[in-house]
Every structure is written in structure tokens, then in C-alpha cells.
Picture 1: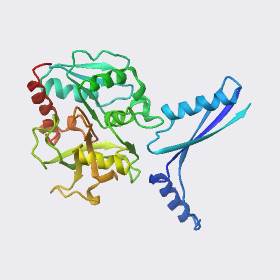
Picture 2: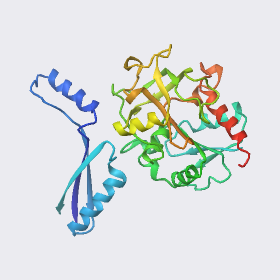
Picture 3: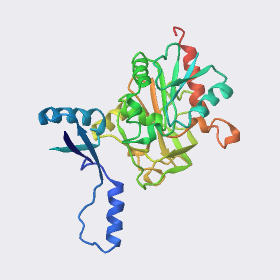
Picture 4: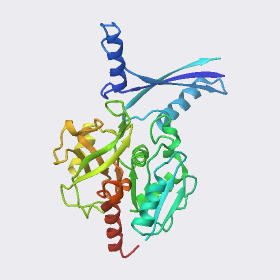
Length: 82
Length: 234
């Protein structure tokens, strides 16, 4: 089995009001040296096969089709054997 | 002349749309379940507001792959009239029937209140009964209405007069101060290049009777009827 962690984040050029709000909250807690805070999503998928190359292809497909919206989001992933 | 109202799991404005078409507009209308593929014989398909599939992943992202959206895509390609309201607009964006995307409201709040919008283009089948620049009092109710498109896309929208409604003040001033959700260029509604698909965040079906506080949304439906009457071939 393979375990894939997919990280989906807003593109740098897209404003992230959630990240900004959390940054303000952290600053009000006394964390003053924050350059930036961005929020994203983590999707964990387990695959019923071991071929990592095939997994990479399939995950790319899934991201493009459904998991990420290419207009505003970037994605990256890592694949681990279980 | 027949209208269809699509129902997804999580739609919650479907009955309002149905009611307005049937009892206010007095035109034939039927529901289309999201698993149905039959949109034959319809002249106008309405994608209503709500929270299709719980807004999981991204608003409209799951609904976009439902069977009915495939049929609606073909329907639109053949020139059929499609209107997406609120969540319906979000689905049309995810499906690629309209350009751009919705982000979370800038202030991170679900906003449910009356706003004013300006009719920027009245030369469409959806707005022909409005005057150019007419200001409408109309309700919004959404968490993701912060419209975004890249610079090239925005230019194209402007060049083709695809921006139909923009948020404004009661007097029609379009500025950031009167932008409820952070939408790029105060955009509240757009249509496709061909002019047969409209998406709008405000709810015309909630502003179609005097008893509801505003009738400013009603001409959207009346305009469609008027336009359909001129299409003898259908």
C-alpha cells in the first residue's frame, strides 16, 4: 500500500484572508516576527498498489481534475510506502 | 416554454426558484434531480443556491461532476439558456461554463443582507427589461462570493461586456466601500461570451415579490421569458 499526502495551497498571487486573520491573531498573542501566514489543505490518500510512478501519475490526474483548482491553487505531494 | 430547476443534495433555494417560475411568472417548470440527464424540451435551466455536497473541498467542486452538469454543459453549448444563482454560479465556475473562481469573503463572514447592484449590461437575454445602469436592491447570502480572475481574464470580461452586475451604493457608486465580499472589480454577476449563461451571487428569486421587500430581481426572469418569446425556432 502507498500513502500519499497532498498539500493544496493558494497561489502566492492570490490573497488569503484566513491566513491573514491567523497572522493577526498570532501577533496579538505576542508573536511579533511573523513575515507571512498562509492556510492550505492536506488530503491523505491510501492506494491499493505499490507502483510509485503509477501513483504519481494518478495523483497528478486527481489534483488537476478535482482536488485543486488550477486558477487559484498549487499542489504538491509526497508518496510513502506503508 | 419550459423551465427546469436543478436539485443537488444540499440545494436550498430550489423551491424558491420553482415557486417564482410557477406562481409568480406563471410558466411551466419542473425539477431536475442531479442524477438525471434529461434536459430535453427545456428552454431555461436554473442552478439554484444552497450548499451542494456540503460545500466540501471547494464550493461547487463536487456538483460540477454530477451527471446533470454534463447534460447542462451540452445544453449550454447548443445555446440553451442557463442561469446559476449563488451556489449555482459557483458550480458554473467550477464546471468551466463561466470563467474565474470564487474565494472566501474577504472578511471571512457569511454575509446575508440586502446589497445594491448596478446593471452594467442590459443588452442580454437576462437583463433586457432593466435600464442601463439601473440600481437594484437585492439580497446576497454567501460565504464564498469573492470573485477572482487573472488580469487577462478580467480584460476579456470587460472587452466583451460580460460583466452584468457590480456591487454599488444605493446611488450607484461602484467602489471598494460598497463591495460586500472583496470581489474583484465589484463583480456580482457575469455571463459567458456567447451570452446564454449567466452567473450571479445575489438572489433574484428572493426579490421577486413586493411582500419580500424587493421586486428588483423579478425582471431577470421576465427578461428570459421575453427573450424566449422572440425565439420562434425553439
